[in-house]
Length: 327
Ligand code: SD4
Image (cartoon, rainbow, N blue to C red; front, side, top):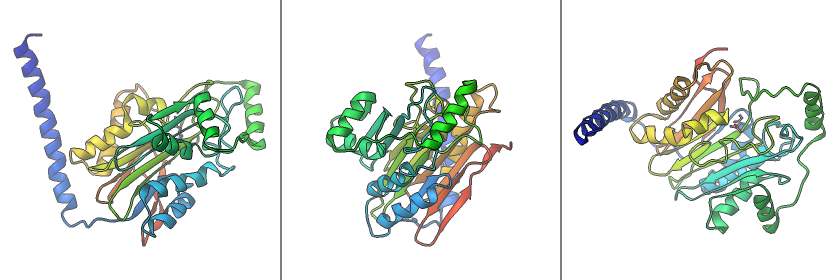
């Protein structure tokens, strides 16, 4: 392509970006004119977010940091054996191994992550250690496990009797059907803004039930399952990780907010991006959740059924997400 044609092409794209971002900016000014900053605040995915938020709030309400709040908050879900998609009690892969993915990110763009981690109940705290005690962002598999043991995390069998029984039942047909629809979900993603105005986020999961051994989803991938930029906002994702990774979902949501979109508009555009890139989304569920620097929050999902928990100084509730398609 000649330089002139390249220039015309890129200026046309640039012009379009300017038009889109100024549309968002105008909207933002209208929407936000009278809004006062709401903080502290914590939001998290699904109804297990209610007890997780409660723990996070014990920290935030006393002036603690958003980082401590999100770590302690999601540990509640990780340690709950009745939750089949996170930590202890998580459904195994198709070979019977419970493998966990988690990541955490603070207001300084520091982040830590573990993927394909086994036999450790609270991967989020291992992810935090990766962030704070190593020069790295991500550890995986056996190396992540060895690191956790060195840091004093106890080894624990995470396959509960109930999850084992369900897996044995699944083995009878062994139908490999990696779908996440409105019945098959549960990852916890949590976003918090503390009283100092700092954002942090955490995301933790056992991933897709009966996945191929070694499969890693979006949840430990910074920019996919979680992204935090303290200048703008934070976002996290739940649902089919492959679809989230393909659009760098949480990073996209934060960038859209940077361009002036409200949290809900940003989540909606990310959902639409996923829909545009799939021939059919009949069996595909993804939900995004976002919190901006002003404590404004929003969510959007492909299908109905996604909800999130909110906790502020005077509100503690579950909110149904807006969505594109009703099932
Ligand atoms: C994954 N995104 O491993 C996770 C699963 C999930 O609600 O979010 N379930 O693909």
